[in-house]
Length: 434
Ligand code: AMP
Image (cartoon, rainbow, N blue to C red; front, side):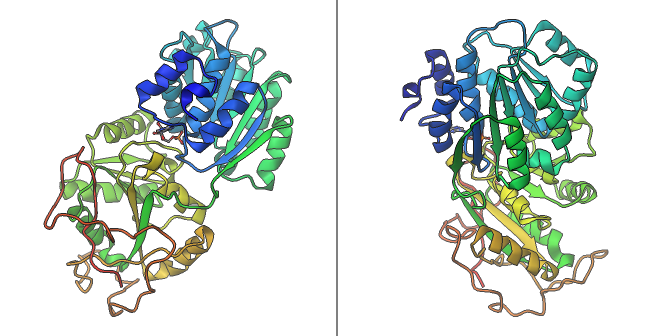
């Protein structure tokens, strides 16, 4: 069913068309009528499914024109980046209305945010900590709230915010609409839902543990000492739009970024030790295409939407299988095609097995053609975790589980190195599989 048949006003449908959306995604098809009806909702949906529009469009529709007293809508997000992204979505979808939004998050000054609240913003999009500050200083009251959105609740739980979230819920009027989004809904989250929601409609989109079908993924076994060399070689042999490289630690992210810069790549870094200004600049520069690579810790793995991330590389294997799904969900969003690769040392083989059990699929194992797996590691590199003794062909068999596998089935022009941004495609020149 097209957007104009979902019961949305023409001002909203026009904004959707201006964004270039064709058909609503499955979560939009299912959630928009529920939200318009005023009922509470629990939606479990994978990241990248279009869930922001699934709540933003019908909320804007229900709000009508700007009205005081404000706010009438509160959206809680786990991270500053997500809050900023959702605020931008509301502003874009509300561009033909006079509705006002306020973005409230930590890491920046209080003044401008306090002013926005004082002037009266219909929709407040906030992270938990800064919102609590404003509630304590009474710069904000929630008495007039009509809609409460709890987004990425599983992430908020992981980050230890649940007590604050419950307190915020208890400050909202009893008569309100509550919308609840979480990739997974384990029992702890059910408990929060019981506390916050009244007779909700439930929607589940796709298997929460599945890998987005538009992503091809593969693992590249390598010794610890040659890991960075392999990353460089992968970057050199690919034709990419933009690449997100994940490391486990903030220190690791800084180190890899410095080394990539030394190898003449343009690099942004995103992790929790950077100032808000640096985080915003990194993300903006990466989105604009000024940086071809962004090195990030898992802070960037949830929900961040960068159109055109053609490749995700897990330099370090993620801490949990769940993080794997989130990390590689950064590419292949909204049906674009993307590749996701994980560099794996022998010590990490068990982690790969755990991920495969979690996603119920075998991840194809690839070797980069032309890369010298027998080279001595550069000075200063650890030598443990060595795959060099293993003969080609001894790895687990590839195939199964995922569509294609890395470059498999995707022809790429021979000899192509980096291509300028904006060039469509972006395929790896990989050698044959084991
Ligand atoms: P989300 O899951 O809300 O973070 O959305 C993921 C990406 O899909 C964002 O870039 C959205 O702009 C995009 N998107 C959402 N809905 C649609 C749609 N109906 N058609 C095309 N792209 C969409």
